[in-house]
Image (cartoon, rainbow, N blue to C red; front, side, top):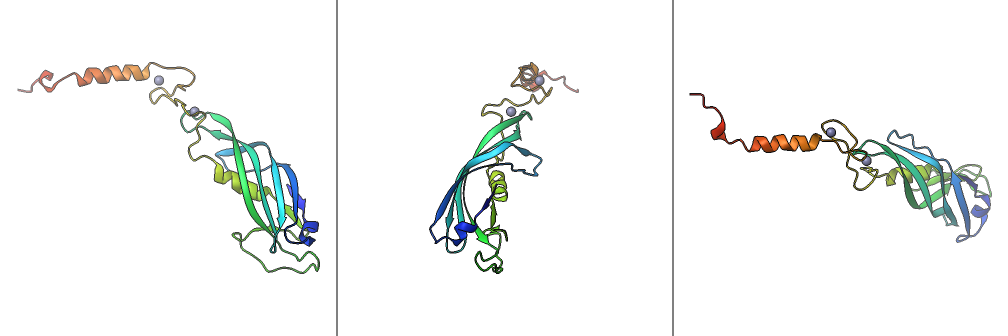
Length: 178
Ligand SMILES: [Zn+2]
Ligand SMILES: [Zn+2]
């Protein structure tokens, strides 16, 4: 998702450009994977320092449910407002002072602004901590490992019966040692 922003960098502060976006983002993350392209709308605004990119996008991510361990896909809506700073002065071609990651993302020497890394970071920030395939996922049976969303097993009922039976034994019922 690369845009040539040379013209916008030459334009007066406040000038803007609206673009649609669609592209691939890879996470390099073992717990989540982006499925298909990330799509959305972006507005580039010329500021006195660089270009402010604001917009919204949607990614679909494949996650693993923490309860039943099944993989599932979930749409992830993203909104962003990020500063992009030039590394080369657009008219003179002179290098500009360097800046930190906190100050902004770089616009490269050919005046290309790439949204990919920013979107990758946005996706990671918005991933759920505890992914669930559905709110009421029943998870796996702790005894036999059966996926309880697909089929109920008898394990829990049997375990409950044994506990009930155990709890009904009082100390007086136990054989005395003398
Ligand atoms: Zn689940
Ligand atoms: Zn079971």
